[in-house]
Image (cartoon, rainbow, N blue to C red; front, side, top):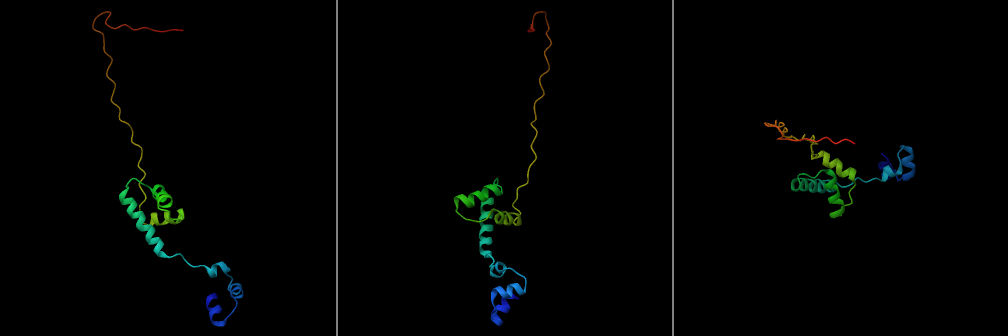
Length: 119
């Protein structure tokens, strides 16, 4: 509405924004191109296919530090979640240990000696 009043009635931007109760930054805002989102999604898909064990953090750091893209981490994470690339957090596996061997029973006297140490 503010854009229409500025273009049709040649009103001042500040006045038309005040009339419609919006800020001038909202009036002047231009959305980012969706081509950047498509490029981000393409990179994330390629990275997740190449490096299956990489999560969001490693993918983001690779794009930011190695490839030099200046994308915000919140934006990259939003696209990462939309693509449903988030890794399932696996529970820690318990270590299966072998049961210890049964203690040997001596068959004759003096076959096994033991010693106690006291202080």
